[in-house]
Length: 427
Ligand SMILES: *[C@@H]1O[C@H](CO)[C@@H](O)[C@H](O)[C@H]1NC(C)=O
Ligand SMILES: *[C@@H]1O[C@H](CO)[C@@H](O)[C@H](O)[C@H]1NC(C)=O
Ligand SMILES: *[C@@H]1O[C@H](CO)[C@@H](O)[C@H](O)[C@H]1NC(C)=O
Ligand SMILES: *[C@@H]1O[C@H](CO)[C@@H](O)[C@H](O)[C@H]1NC(C)=O
Ligand SMILES: *[C@@H]1O[C@H](CO)[C@@H](O)[C@H](O)[C@H]1NC(C)=O
Ligand SMILES: *[C@@H]1O[C@H](CO)[C@@H](O)[C@H](O)[C@H]1NC(C)=O
Ligand SMILES: *[C@@H]1O[C@H](CO)[C@@H](O)[C@H](O)[C@H]1NC(C)=O
Ligand SMILES: *[C@@H]1O[C@H](CO)[C@@H](O)[C@H](O)[C@H]1NC(C)=O
Ligand SMILES: *[C@@H]1O[C@H](CO)[C@@H](O)[C@H](O)[C@H]1NC(C)=O
Ligand SMILES: CC(=O)N[C@H]1CO[C@H](CO)[C@@H](O)[C@@H]1O
Image (tube, rainbow, N blue to C red; front, side, top):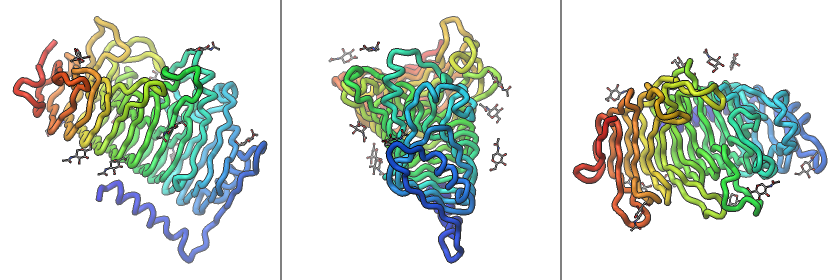
C-alpha cells in the first residue's frame, strides 16, 4: 500500500473515537428551501461541530451568498448535498467579498477550508455547485487575467492531515481546486466538470482557467481517482510542491497536466521534487463541445528576464524540478503528448532560464497525437536537462506518420525507440 493510502487509513482510525462509545457533538442540517439563504446555518453548524465533532448535511442545495471559511479540527463533515454558490458575478468580483489566501497570482477564493485532522466526505452525491455557466457567459466577451478576482471553487489552505473524499464540483467558474501551504492531504475521489452548454459558444474554449487543481507550497499531497473536465490544466503543479502522488487521473479536454508555470516570481525559487504519477488518461472531447486537448504532460518555466510583474507578468525566478515519474499514461489525440519549454511569457533575446529540469522518467505511454512530433523537450541553454528516461514510450501520430522526437539542451536521453531517436541539439 502506498504511504498516502496508509495516511488515509490512519486518519480514519484516529478519528474513530468520534464514533465509538464516546458521544461527540453532531450537527445535522437540512436545506432551508428555495428562495432561502443557508449561509448562516452552515456557518453555525461548522462553528458548533466542526471541531471535535461531526457535521451532517442532508441532501439538497444549500445556498451560499458570501465567502466562508471552515476551520476544522479533529472532525468529520458528511456532505450529502451541494453548497450552491449563487452566481452574483459582480458581487464576487469585488475584492472585499473573497479571500486572498492563495499567494501565487493573488488568486481569489470564496470557500476556504483550513485546520487539521479532518475528513470531508461527500459520498459521491454532494460537493459544490459553482454555477459556472453564468460566469463563462459573463466573461466570454471580457478580458480574463490572472488575479482578476474570479474565485477558486474549493481552496484548502494551511491544512495538516486532511482527507477529502468522493467530492463533486459542478461547473467551476475558475480553478476547481487548490491546495496551498498544506501537508499530508489526501483527495480520494474528485469530480470537476466545466462544460459550456450555451450554443453561442459551442466549438470555442469559453472555459479557460477552469484548472482541476493547482498545488502550491505543499508537501505530501495525494490525488487519487480524479475525473476532470476543463478548458485548462487538469492538474497544475506549481512552486514548492514536493512529494506529490497522483493515481487514476482522467482529464477530459483542456491543456493537460502541467508542471508550472514556474519561475514567475524573480524573488522566489520554485522547487518541485518527487512527483509520482501513475495511470493517467487524457481524452479529447468532441470539438463542438471543447476544442482543446493540448498536451499529455508538459513542463514550462518563464525565462530569466523579468517581463512585467505578477500576477499577469513575471519571470526571473530560479529553482528546479526533479525526480518526476509519469507511468501508465494513455493519450487520445492530444496535440503534443510530451512537451517542455522554458520561454513562457518571454521574448526572443531574453536571458534563458536558470531553472533546471532533471531526472524525468516516462514509462509505458500509449495512444495517439495529432502532430507527428510526439516528444518536444526544449530545455534552457542556461540549465540543460540531465537524465530524461523513457521505457516503453509508444505514442503514435493519429494519421500514421512516423513519430518524431526532439530534444534541445538535453544532456542525456535514454530509451526512446530507434537508434537516433532523440536528436540532441544544443543552442
Ligand atoms: C437557492 O437555491 C435554489 C435551488 O437552486 C433556488 O431555487 C433559490 O432561488 C435559491 N435561493 C436564493 C436566495 O437565490
Ligand atoms: C496554520 O494552522 C495552524 C494550526 O493548524 C495555526 O497555528 C497557524 O497559525 C496557521 N497559520 C496561518 C498562516 O494561518
Ligand atoms: C460534464 O457535463 C456535461 C454537460 O452537463 C455532460 O454532458 C458530461 O457528460 C459531463 N461529463 C462527465 C464526465 O460527467
Ligand atoms: C486507471 O484509472 C481508471 C480511471 O480512473 C480506472 O478506471 C482504472 O481502474 C485504473 N486502473 C488501475 C489499474 O487502477
Ligand atoms: C516577492 O515578490 C512579490 C511581488 O512580486 C511580493 O508580493 C512578495 O512579498 C515577495 N516575497 C518575498 C519573500 O520577498
Ligand atoms: C520554496 O522553498 C524555498 C526554501 O526551500 C524558498 O526559498 C522559496 O522561496 C520557496 N518558494 C516559494 C514559491 O514559496
Ligand atoms: C500500461 O498502461 C496502461 C494504461 O495506460 C495499462 O492498462 C497497462 O496495464 C500498462 N501496462 C503495463 C505493462 O503495466
Ligand atoms: C538526479 O538523479 C541522480 C541519480 O540518481 C542523483 O544523483 C541526483 O541527486 C538527482 N538530482 C536531483 C536534483 O535530485
Ligand atoms: C500527418 O500529419 C503531419 C503533421 O500534421 C503532416 O506533416 C503529415 O504530412 C501527415 N501525413 C499524412 C500521411 O497525412
Ligand atoms: C454580448 C456579445 O457581444 N456577445 C458576443 C460574444 O462573443 C460571441 C462569439 O465569441 C458572439 O457570438 C456574441 O454575440
